[in-house]
Image (cartoon, rainbow, N blue to C red; front, side, top):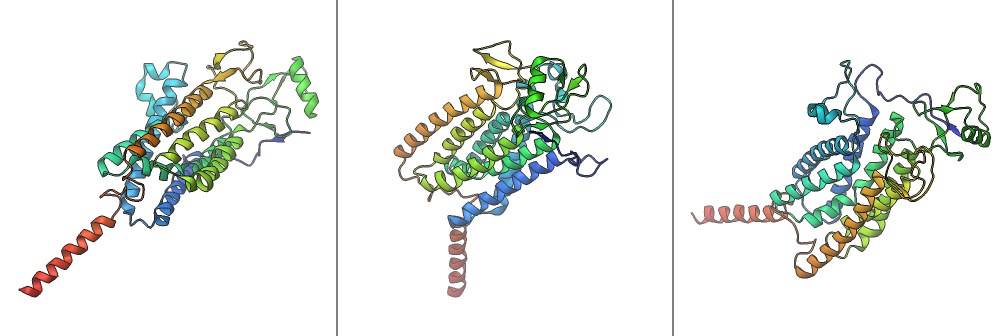
Length: 350
């Protein structure tokens, strides 16, 4: 057999019968890793930062990510109209029977917008450089994606298209196809899969696209930004721009292996428009994710140009001196020390 079976020992719940799932736990791990990597960068720069303020940033950013990711998913990817008819269901974690299901359906691009908004607001309130702080966060974020995508894999969701590749995997909840169809017989023959019932349905291997994304959007993109781009930063906003370009490119090509969302299919179809989405038919058919990633790439290029122009117009505002008064304690500590020294001097005079 030239395919893999989805591990039968994997369960979505951490403890069977309790509403605690590995998917949610992986999100916590992702945010924790990002926090640790941001803190490490601040220590490397020998910045005397306020850990409570950094924690506050992550708290509000997580809220922004979750809210916007959920809203964006229900607006862009839901085709049933369910949430338009009953908007309160967007954040309702129970199904029609009252069983706890969590918030199923989150959009990365919505979460990205939520993070941008939260970061802009936070930097304005705390009076710190958005470009500098954004670079610090952007260099850390991708490693967290590895765990987020592993959560998708554990849930057995967001699998890829049908394949005869040795990397193909049988996902238990994937759509089954009539074993009598010629193309189904063809793929089954290529991978050495037996057909027990020629008149029944057959579950064919899929690309484990969640693992592709965990590796390339997570480990590879993080290593690129952390060890290459971060070391070559020439102006504030440099890492953020390359993060947008890098993620957009990686996700754009992985989308060719991932099956488009049910009910949506291809948003742009320039070849074989009637081709089924569970099979790769043409590189000229584009999913919703690919369109959003293309816009992300263009946005990253424009962002780099704008950030570079801003740095040239404000040469004195470097990342080394772009520290505000709330999140970085260096200035405040010195001022406090000076005031304490003055008080001691006055006491001696008296």
